[in-house]
Length: 577
Image 1 (cartoon, rainbow, N blue to C red):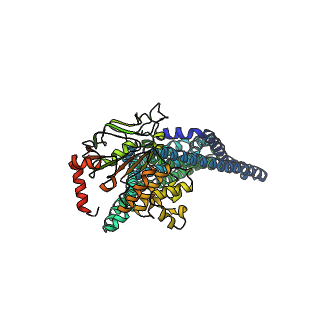
Image 2: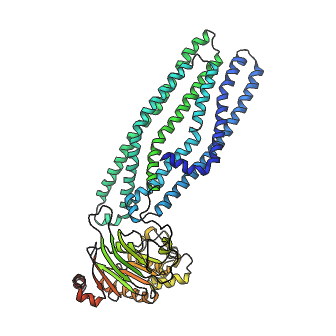
Image 3: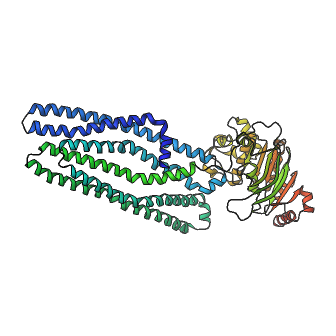
């Protein structure tokens, strides 16, 4: 998967990569030329006392050094730009892929894991690209070139390279092989830490209300300790690499000087050639050490690439049709025909044999006990999930045949847990319609019974909203979410228990204001509160995922025992209602 990612997302940057290779080649060759010049200065200049030769050759060394520096700087520049662009494109691809996921795929991966894959995992692969451009490309050039140049100086000492290089490669390989499982486990531990931290931050009120801070602290400490232990295991293996490299490097230097001194003494080798051979051997081993750093990064990057590939290769269960219907001329009338839905791995269906029709200009209410499948039913209408069997139709056309964007543009959904984005009141309301005027925003706020508290805010429509709407109350958050749907002016309104945080008086005023505003639209209201749905044109009563009653309020009181039980339980709990 790592090779596939690199091939796919580096393809647009082939020219900068070629420039990096060319610059690294020139820079490395310049670096390899310097020991030969140094050997000439010793053998032909210092040994013979030729000052002019020393100065002229030293000038060449200075010029070659400047070329090497310029090429290195340019290579790092192009390499860094390419690596950053690669990371940007990969993050964008993950983001857009996750944006196509249905609730099923998001639940499968989990939000913390998806965040880790789009941040930490991408960063690891991006760092591999950067280090490849700055180190890995130069390493084989330096290794091969160093061997050739060393053989030019003296063939008699070449056997030292045949010993030291394989010993170094085998030693590092043994360490790296043991590091791979630790890196794989480390990424999973990071997911767990992110999940625990996210749960604690999201549920901080619950934690404090139940005085569970010590328990949550212990839970985080366990996850943190597991990550730390795994990181320490990987770190202990990693710290063995540098001492191993230095041991072999120094032992090789001693061996060159030991055996080279004998050759110099016998006249088979010049002192300058011995110095150059030693420098080439050091360059060769340094190139192997640079490859070692890459060997450290490749296993972890490969693990991260596998995790990224899982996301990129996962197809959404909600698939756009090959030839979508993009034009529907009539009003948005809903119909469900024998709809059934299973969650993956569930023993029984959440919904079964659901059939009803909701006409334009009508209000259809859905009520039932907790777990009856009300929210799932709304999700099927909005095609956040696809029905396991049966058909959901809009204007007589199955929603699987409709263009998804056209379907979602016709729907205004107010979810059970309303979510507001970081920004202002206006930016959140315009989420439904970016071109809405301030007058249209205020009109929606009036209908949603939210205009009064927005006017009391310091900056009105420009008042800031924190992430998730945490700086407003639950009832205010619900009313702003309703206003956001009203600004869109859709043909189908889906209110998923969107009035639960409102008092009865505000609920009644809001529903009265909604009637003229949604008169021509199809309205579906999910509610636990009977008083919210008594004036609906039809009420669907769910129990155990099946319809047990369908009709108006008065009819159901006489024909549906389940509905009668709900009404009686609420009248007993709230006599005033």
